[in-house]
Length: 68
Image (cartoon, rainbow, N blue to C red; front, side, top):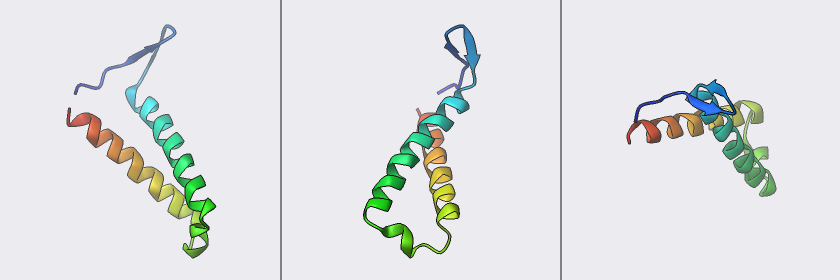
């Protein structure tokens, strides 16, 4: 897949910015799921853990879309 700019109401947006927002939304859902079961209390540094999950989700989305 070729990453091209996305026309959003007349403004061209880089495709990575759309992927950043999508990964953020997925990470919020995962964070709520993990917090609901109380799994964050077993993590040494919850903020670093959530950030690493965000990076993993974002890179997975980029690699999945690039493979097409």
